[in-house]
Amino acid sequence: MILADTHTHTTFSSDGHGEPEAMIASAVSRGLSVYCITDHMDWLYPMDQTKFIFDPKEYFAKLTKLREKWSDRIDLRIGIELGLRDEADVAEAVRKYYEELLRSYPFDYVIGSTHCVCHIDPYYPSYWENRTGTEGMLQYLESELWNMEHSDGFQVCGHLDYLLRYVPKNRRVNKAKLGDAVDAILLTLIRRDIGLEINTGSLRRNYPETNPSAAIAARYYELGGRLITVGSDAHYPEHVAADFDRAEAMLTSIGFREYAVFSGRKPSFYKF
Ligand SMILES: [Zn+2]
Ligand SMILES: [Zn+2]
Image (cartoon, rainbow, N blue to C red; front, top):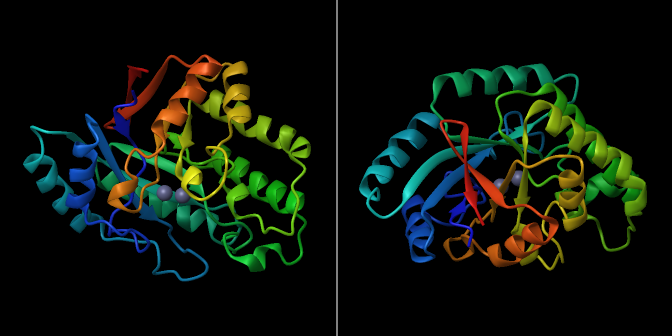
């Protein structure tokens, strides 16, 4: 059984629907021994610059108190999900902001995610107006590769292929054409000692696989990668640790024997 959920959101994220304490209580009720909150920080988010940011001072004050209050029932870790950016006009400003943030606050765990491409969050349909499904995915993976190569301070690549969840129904993705782009990302992760997050959020959204998929997780394993984390990406208390049984079955069938949980941005390994 996976005893740690390492990717979850609270009301510190504008799309989070559970107060931090309600999320922690849910983690306890699900029998977890470690629980990590990773609220969104998407600096200079193009659709609305105030949408995915929070006050880190308030965040640490609140979560540190809760960590003490709940310490006999669960080990709370304070993390963050950073929205990384590769566009030439914002990349440097975003990088500097994150560097200062991570220097100023003792985050246990930092997820590096690619949420925006060409100044658009491809979650929005406008991204797909002039792109086929395959083109949209390739452009996303290209940005993600740049982010994985040029950004620092994060421990894992969040939800590597999650854009597949948001490809419009009238677009088709030829997954065979994504292989080289995915390999380039996986090899970069391995070279830079960055982990691969297995995100189960997709399984609640009528998407049949985790992000990344079993095929990508297997390819990571084949290339020598062993640094895996598992997160539900819960935005509601009832979704904490959701579908972890499916993630575990998938990972152990590939050959993974352990998953990582971070404290002070250093991993500990837990057996499945
Ligand atoms: Zn994300
Ligand atoms: Zn998330």
